[in-house]
Length: 132
Image 1 (tube, rainbow, N blue to C red):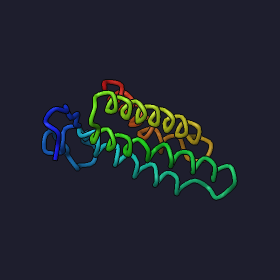
Image 2 (image 1 turned 135 degrees about the vertical axis):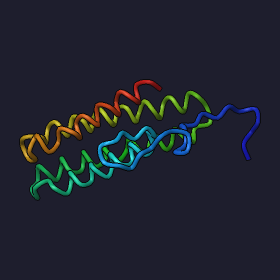
Image 3 (image 1 turned 60 degrees about the horizontal axis):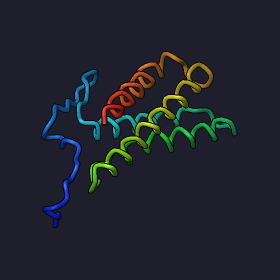
């Protein structure tokens, strides 16, 4: 049961904002967008070659890329504004780190053209999370 004296901060649910599933259309629910981005990061990690350097890169990008959504979900359950802002700030940091790993991989291990949209999506998520 929620305490009536505590103000809860929540991210709009899927029913409160448009969330098209059609390819090419923007997802406006940050929770769903971070989830879809995490799935894409996992796909990218699977495409990396099997060698020691890429094993390190794979670990790093999977940790940061999946952490974005995890922190957004934690922010959704925040009891205080301070906790909400902190979790969203961590999600933003993780998005910036993921963008770095994508840029590092692009052109070296996966064709740049194949990662351009993912790098752009990482930047858009950073921009969205910068507003919290």
